[in-house]
Length: 138
Image (cartoon, rainbow, N blue to C red; front, side):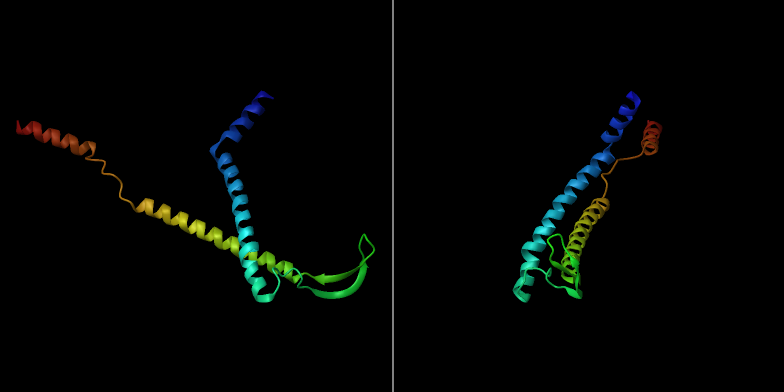
């Protein structure tokens, strides 16, 4: 049991596990920001154009009165096209934000790689050659 706990502790403490946890937390935060942007800005523009803040009411009824719900009301068979459109808008905006984040990260990474490294000075062989030449001149 002790070795199991030791292995589990090592697994949890590794950098990859912590980085994954941070990524999940940041992902949830980014998701909340994108949802707020979608609901608060994009869908409000949709409301200004179409008169409704989302497309949830856009449906296609395939058949009326196919059954009853728990309250005894008639249920229609409908395709909820509007819900799909709302989700598709959120997906596209999420993809756009992630694309921009990764593009910025890659640009930073590329810029750091392009910066010239500090001059390490002469190599060991060059130093030994200089010492040899200096000793020969004496």
